[in-house]
Amino acid sequence: MTGNNKPHFVTSQNFHGDNEYIEWLREIKSRYQAVRSRVALQANYGALEFNWLLGRDIVQKQAEARWGTGVVNQLSLDLREAYPDVKGFSARNLYYMKGWYEFYMTDDNHKKILHQLGAKLQIAENQNPIRLHQLGAEIVSPDRIDSIIDDGGMLPIFGIIPWKHHLLITSKCKSVEEAFYYMARVIDEGLSKRELADVIDNGDFGKQGKAITNFASQLATHQSQLAASVLKDPYRLDFLMLERGYNERDLENAIAKDITRFLLELGNGFTYVGRQPELVVGADGYFPDLLFYHIRLRCYVVIELKVVDFKPEFAGKLNFYVAACNKLLRQSGDNPTIGLLLCKSKDQTKVEWAFDSIQNPMGVATYEGIKIKDKLPSIEELTKRLDMVEQELREYKERDRKNNDEE
Image 1 (cartoon, helix red, strand yellow):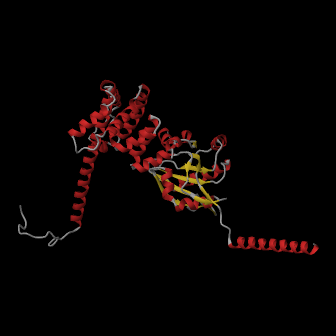
Image 2 (spheres, rainbow, N blue to C red):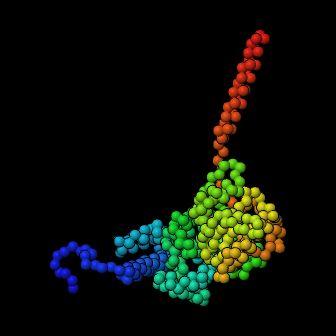
Image 3 (cartoon, rainbow, N blue to C red):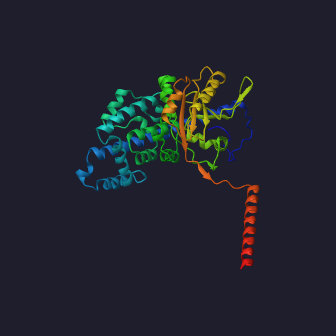
């Protein structure tokens, strides 16, 4: 051991830091954080795989039929006695393990869906080998996916999602398709358990891809599918409170004031660029309502707000804004700009006919949930009402006086 061996307090005396030291410290901290994260991920992956396989054993061994309905409770007691410091062996948690496995593997139809959706999500995640490596997992080929499912094993992508997230998904989702939709959201967006509960309660799965668009004819297949999955219908704006009879500017102002909540409702990947950016063409100025950029789509998204039902003429104005963004904002690496009309309601035939000759990718969706508050009367209105009441009282007194005189 080198250095001062005499008793002393550790201080930074005789230290002469510089930019090189700061960079070295940053590298050390980054390296340690990566190691700590990898250890945590691998521990989570191993624990999840154990839970999956234990649930599989309880189901496949028909444990309750073979050893009695109390077998899960007994197994819990035995495991807790063997590993007293482990909290995950409660009887309740063992039943969760069983239910988790059964949700995906309960019958041949579920297994078929698991083959399709599991392969699709796993192949997408194969594009991120660093994360799989951190998990201690492997890049899995489609043939290997089939083998894993046939053997009742756990797909590696399941290990990316925390245990409590899995329990929330299986307790609230009604189908394997819905469960995979929310698993993909957790993987892509890093949703916390509370955020996951919010998007499930909000019914995002049922809204996915419901906006009416012309993406199929105006975008490349992959971009079209991705863009369609990004948009939803309806959008829930229950975080807004507006006065009765609000107009488009009122709606836009309210959204701009709470843009964080609006971004959450739009979904992952949207970056706010601005509101009412001035577009000058010739001697005229134009002002698109809201402008965003979507990271995964790699394109600008123009949103126009309407507080009435969809009208065909709305499409022409939005098309103009989309064309302007393509010509003035779009860079070489960007995909074509997308336009989105948010309306009070829409008629599918009107939308489809309005889009028939439009060459830019556009969609129409609706919104709901805005809270309405009654507009408070102004001072002038209150004064006018008081004057009317006073006049009515004077007239009533006059009539009453005349009646008394006549009697």
